[in-house]
Image 1 (tube, rainbow, N blue to C red):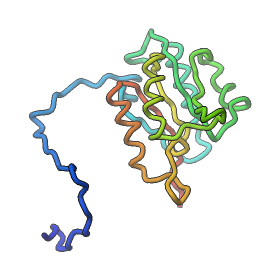
Image 2: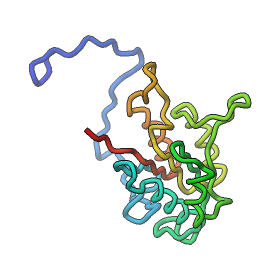
Image 3: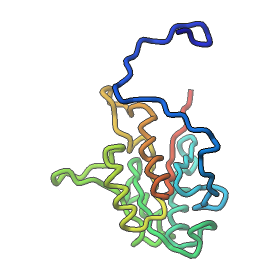
Image 4: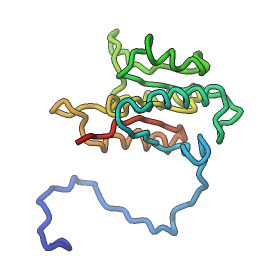
Length: 190
C-alpha cells in the first residue's frame, strides 16, 4: 500500500475489534446549537479561553461563573441561576480565586478536589471524568471551569501532560450530558 505522498505507512498493529465506521452526512441528525452564553459558549461543548499569562483569563472565568450562578448570562441559562464547578490550580483560593468570585453566588460555586484515602488532591482527567459527570448531573451544574486545562489532564511517563487527546473525554462528557465546559490555556511563547 502506498500513501498519496508516495511513502509507505508505518507498521502498526491494529487492535482486534477496532474497525473504521463511516457514516454518510445524510445519516446524521442535525440539531440547533443551544448556547450557554449566546453566540459565544455552546452548551455541551469544550470552550477554550487561550492567551498569554497575565491577560485576565482567570478573571474572565470568575466573571463567567458569577453570571451563571446569578442567572444573568444571556443564553439558555438566563433567568436560571445554576451552580458552577471551578478548578483552579495556579492561584490561591483564599487569596485570589474566592475574592475574584465576590460577584458570584458563593454558595453555588464549588471548588473541585479529589479525596484519595484521606489525601486531598486535584482532579485528574480522564480518570475522574465519570465521577465529575455524576456530580455535574446531581447538582444541575451550569458550567465547569478548568483553570488551566492542562493542570487537570493526567501526566504520561515523562511527567508532562500526556497528549492533548486526553481532553477528548471532557469534550465527550460535555457533549453527551449537555454541560458546558470552559477552560483556560496559556498560549505558547517562542
